[in-house]
Amino acid sequence: MKAKEYLNIMQKILHQVDEGVHVLDSDGNTIIYNNSMSNLEKMSSKDVMKKPFSEVFKNLNNENSTLLKALKLRESTINKKQTYLNKDGKEITTINTTFPVFHGEEIIAVVEVAKNITEMQQLSHKILKLQDEIEKPGEAKFNKIRKYNFNNIIGQSSNFVEVIERAKKASRNSASVFIYGETGTGKELIAQSIHYNSERKDMPFIAQNCAALPETLLEGLLFGTSKGGFTGAIDRAGLFEQANGGTLLLDEINSMPYELQAKLLRVLQENYIRRVGGSKDIPIDVRIIATSNEKPEKILGEGKIRKDLFYRVNVIPLNIPPLRERREDIPLLAEKFINKYNERFNKKVYTLSDNAKEKLLYYSFPGNVRELENIIMGSISLIDDEEILTLEHIGEDDININSITHNINEIEDKGIDDYLADLEKKIILDALEKNDFNISKAAKMLKIKRQTLQHKIKRYEVLIKN
Image (cartoon, rainbow, N blue to C red):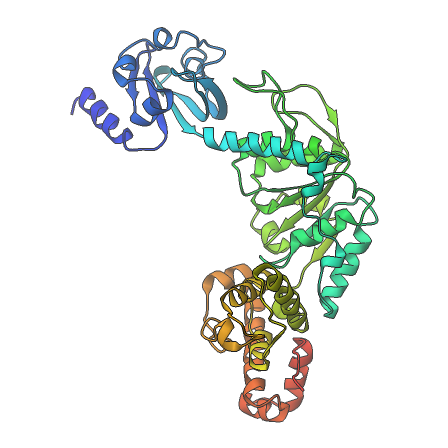
């Protein structure tokens, strides 16, 4: 097969990919220009193909074109953000990877792969603009943010109260806090409570999910951008500057790109930031609260977080127990949510029926407090004129405490020891329920000694129904 035929096949294949692909030969003429790149730059393929790159893109040179830099200077560029105007004058932002292709010491082609992130870049700018508008103390818009404090936290189980007491102590200083808790346990609620109970309460509280944006955008969002730092860049303060004097919550810090973690560590060590593309050091005073829905030992073992960064943010560790480990709080939380959604839906439900309370009390709640709230919200929204929330309202089939399935993903998340412990606890609860919470009968059913069952009940903090 001839080289020309190979080229035609490659062109047809590359027309099917979402990323833009632009390839020049050793003389700087375009030999591949796929449909995605054509749509991105609003350039017709016939206006680009087989023509010198420098003649088609006359405003680009070795300094501002990664393709020419690869061709003339033999330099590769990996994941570089570029903002430029296309043929129609529309601002386009891409993440480009560009590299020369060698045959021996000779360059035979240069390849550029561009991913269009224009919409994500616009979203990043909107987030920064919105934060800048609402996080200024003393302005009316600042007061529109929902502020949570320790008075909003419901719970009386000993393991949960212990965490809240530690959180209250943490609010009396500015040390970094690391909060671990499963999804739905209320990590941001506790983070906000720490902030609004501290001396920083009149300063901004800003939260950013580290898994929401790719590294290149997250870096600019956190540290800001400097005009001229890259094509189309403007001077814009990042979240660190906007949170200055206050608190920055880094949610799901275990999802932050590894290279960006090193830059974050430097900021935390030196207490200044440098905007992307800038040269000026800007001092900042920001308290960091980081959260993770995966256990610290897991994210450390899997290398999802740098050890040096973890030890920097884990000055005050808080481990929020899941709802299945604080069952005595379930009725309290259910009552709170009943009152909340009575008001929202204009209903008059005042209590749970005994069978509904029992079902909730011994359900495992994989979605934790958030799942309990959703169950109550859904139930009340469907009630007509009833005053009691019954088992029929919450859906008996939807909450099945007797069905135990082995989920390999859950085992991977928790580890086999924790998974088996949870499984044993569920079996004990089931046996107790079936025997009207008679410990002797339940022990006989489980074929273990009564003393052994009592030990396990104490170990797992099983709530015995009177």
